[in-house]
Image (cartoon, rainbow, N blue to C red; front, side):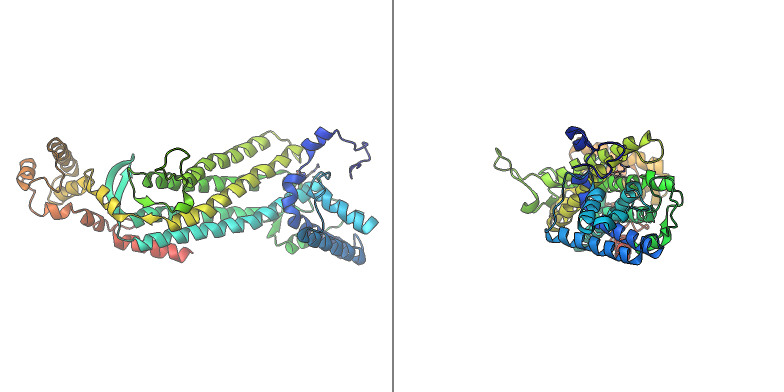
Length: 456
Ligand code: ARG
């Protein structure tokens, strides 16, 4: 079939060129937004007298019919059409005749596609926000249910100081709340309407861009038509938010992989979120956590790809920009699926506090507390630090822990050591003493949890 834009050329594009050019398989998912945008456009054309009120009414009714038929399945996408905009206009014209041909007055596909993208992503981002919220809720629940479980806190993946498991888990809740805030902030800049920028330079018709934008729920309109049709920074911002969110999910996934290993066994993942091995009968593999970690690279790739696509483009619209959709949709679908799996996986995992506690007992995790003990008795911190280090070395030589090291031996290092050292380095006590704001004591963690709940 001849192209809708045939005229200057015959419109008979080579079939492989047509395949390269076509974006309908990708952009058909924006049909609702495309039709809603067209309905608002028709209403604006009618209101301003650019077309008659009757014509506007016919267009709106026709567009509503197309939407209904697509939803019911009565109408299927015609993949010989170049993109979603052409498809809708073609069906409208088939159904309404010449009136259908009036819809594209005072607009261009350039402002139309920017409009559709902003509307589509704005809607989808709401779902991501709700999923983030659910995940924070699950994490808060895990922290609440296991408030007192003690585990080793790590730096360099070496046991560092004892912490509450709930403290560790709430660290992720904090990160996710910032992911939510970043996304919310990015939505503010996304919610600016480009429609009416037309091809690039605006239009000679007396349009009402504010009316059209308001009808579609936008906060404001793009104030420079070239900018409105040619920037995709809203896509990049979204991809950046997604990348950071995935980085957080990936770090959490990495911990789940470690924690589910026999070396740690801090958690047992539910069978629903693990797989077996085709050869090793004993295996229970944390594939979902690994895949979330793995898919993070894919989302970064989407961001890098689009940054690269855009970097050399002269103003205004260039067809390269059609590539924005594949990148953004891929990232969106990936993030959504990862969150949808992460939420129940975290919710259903079994926490094994005894194993955590046992791990916290090893590795001289209370050495800082021993140094602090000496400081409280008057030694400068650096001196206390050195003495404690030497005691740890002696324990290692003798196969002892700080808890089992005899008082007489302690006294050979410093006369300041007394019987109360054992209470001071008691693991639970080490945790409970960390009452500083944001610290790991149960009082402090309860405060963190309460704050997180106010954010939900
Ligand atoms: N399918 C195109 C895209 O996604 C729509 C805009 C086409 N504009 C144009 N002048 N060819 O970018």
